[in-house]
Length: 304
Ligand SMILES: [Fe+2]
Image (cartoon, rainbow, N blue to C red; front, side):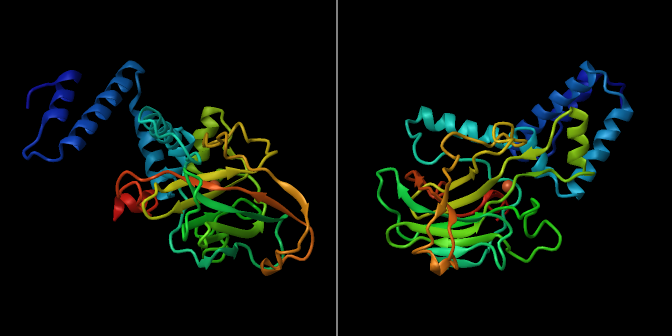
């Protein structure tokens, strides 16, 4: 083997192959490797710095936190911005804004028709009902739309990820009625922060950034022929509403809160005292193809 300079090494890395492979993967890998070679050279990255980064990546993956870092470094929002830009160009920017899914969706939540209670037992916070309709962009109700809703518990943990929680706690699947109606009872969740003493927290400490997310509730709304909507709503008044770790707050997704709503009509949700309510309609675009209407969440789409 001859001696190589940096450029010669890069050229070999990026062109070497004995089979066609996947052209797209080869293209992307070549670009990323080229950019990293350039970063290492121009910023004079030392071997210790490089291997420290590799150790961090190993621990990040072992800890299941890659999806946290993608959100915290803006990649999740970037993908949404790019889809919004494509929609603008195509003249189809309409309906409820999308927002990041986040890394904590779990498929298979208990399923209910029209209404559900997400929490159980004594309220762990302000008793809260969210209700409304799923509509299309013509304002027509979407009968039997499928909605997944999930949020954090009173200390910011999600079931299936946070110790001590019940399976599917604070996660439900709701099918709307013929008029697109849904409603659910839960409690107003608090905001939360990235796990302390974690690889994610290490990076954010080094960046001088906080890891807080404002209070929010996640949704995945699906109906045949309509574009699957992944979004989240924010609860107004949170300190971090405009300073989200994951950059996910959006106009049009900050719900209005009504306090002291009379309990009449909400008995089926176990409510007998004044409570807090929000009315919010989810508006779904027409899907242009099967992929846009796929009911799968983001990782299920690519791992099926
Ligand atoms: Fe969340």
